Length: 162
Image (tube, rainbow, N blue to C red):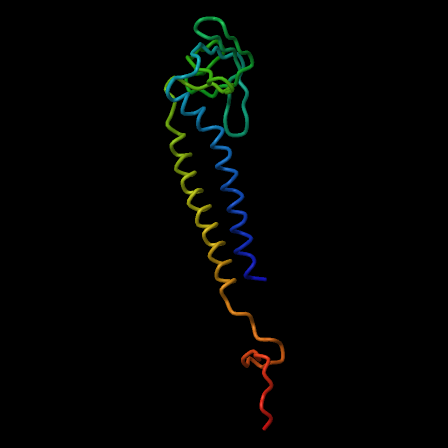
């Protein structure tokens, strides 16, 4: 039973790594696009502050620079927002991404990619270990039949009686 626990833990690790890779496959392209300034820029106006256990967010309205897009009840935790009416410049993500990003987007997506590289290495090593274990199990000789006392398996020829 103790041998199955590390195997079970490695399956959990595989599941977590595959989930992280799936989330990154969806999110990282949006973060990269925002970092490159590919979104729509506009002005965010803080209206009400909502505080939670560890941080506070502002809820406000965002209007694109050309006035064609308007989003209400947008959450922002921008550090330059201190009171209702404060304004900051934010960009809306590219098509399909409703997130708001600051003008000076961080390179946080690089850290996520480094974690993904670690996950990829884990997945490759996991699969490699499973393949090696399967090959080693197939190459091992079959166990002797019960009651044979570990002797050689009979070849079908009768033994000489002594």
